[in-house]
Amino acid sequence: MKVLVVGSGSREHALTWRLRKSPQVLDIWVAGGNFGTAQIATNLPLSPDDVRGIVGTAQRLDIDLVVVGPEQPLTDGLVDELREAGIAAFGPDKAAARLEASKSFARRVMTESGIPCPDYRVFGDESAALDFLRAHAGRVVVKADGLAAGKGVALCSTVEESVIALKGCMSDRIFGAAGETVVIEDWLEGVEVSVFAFSDGENISAPVAACDYKQVHDGDHGPNTGGMGSFSPPAFWTADLADQVCREVLSPTIEAMADRGCPYRGMLYAGLMFTRDGPKVLEFNCRFGDPEAQVILPLMESDPVEIMQACIDGTLATTPVNWSERPHVGVVMVSGGYPGAYETGREIFGLDADVSGDSTSVTGLETLVFHAGSQPAMNADGKTVAITSGGRVLTVVGNGDTLEEARARAYSRAEQISFEGSYYRRDIGSLNVGNRQGILT
Ligand code: GLY
Image 1 (spheres, rainbow, N blue to C red):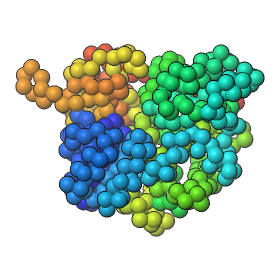
Image 2 (image 1 turned 90 degrees about the vertical axis):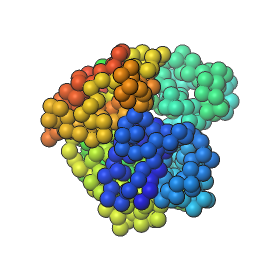
Image 3 (image 1 turned 60 degrees about the vertical axis):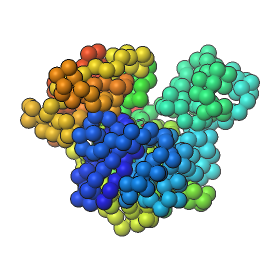
Image 4 (image 1 turned 180 degrees about the horizontal axis):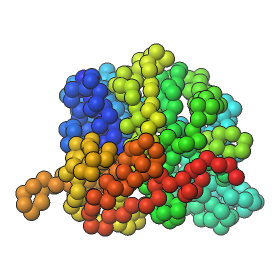
């Protein structure tokens, strides 16, 4: 089977790595890609957002399955166009991807179907939104309705903060058209977790859960990033909790989307807050999470091609989806200065043991290194090396019998890798940070 993965991040390297292990996969191409994917597949000089280019290339290469990583091409209808061209594609179509592409659409689906979520209001008019904020005591979340590269959500402790966030969206248009409409929600307290399940439009698979670390500095301080690390599975993620999430959130969402005539086929990612009143949906995403994919794809025991094909064909009910429970911790290494300005073009050292992205490291510990902002380049000695090309550069994953062991392995491997200005948090996988032990206060 010939597979084309769309995307350039660590999530897509992890997807390519996991698909490569399927006995059904002969060849893999990556639309975009990075130094890591280039070691295990063929990178194509295509933007992951170039819908026409990807469809044309998939036809030319006679691709059997396209796996779409990021939300933008899903929102732009890449899966619809591929389907139209007779090419099987994993991921929701444009109508179903609205669960992520429009926060107001997602909230409407939730309220109309009784799926637990915070109280919210939708505004297309700035002065009405300002009046609401000034009259609303308490902490709120201001969200740009559309896609904003993960930056469109502002947690606001004061009226002043919420007004700044709102004006940023609606007057300054810092997120462009994505901020024409805003959703203002109650700020939920509790335990945050990312839950993932496959769906074929009717059925859902067994879910898997992970916790991520969004802020740039230890102790959850500093500005938000695309993700500084993750671990899976959380200790508080029990079978009972998984059942509750399926019953109260995932299954009703799949049913609601089917009832609306836009069945959801692909990976459904529910960002949840476990509150004293049970799980509530913070947001839905229409894809694997990043950096969660890097710690859950190594847990996937079943054949990814079979699962993805079953999502497309509507046969998920009879397809096994098994997840290992072995603890995995992923530490994201970034360029100094990220998420602000940073430099690129720095050679990455210490990758020799795992250029294939799958290794037993030089210390004999089990680790994986997934690339994101890295590209191949020729060094002064004429040797092909990896150089940095983005803010988030690598996710270094360790696994172990315990979370502590997985964490120690990830950090021990990260310490062997270096590039000028590299930075990573030192507390990924530590349960004492934030509320990751699952204790409701
Ligand atoms: N983990 C955040 C995201 O993938 O959007």
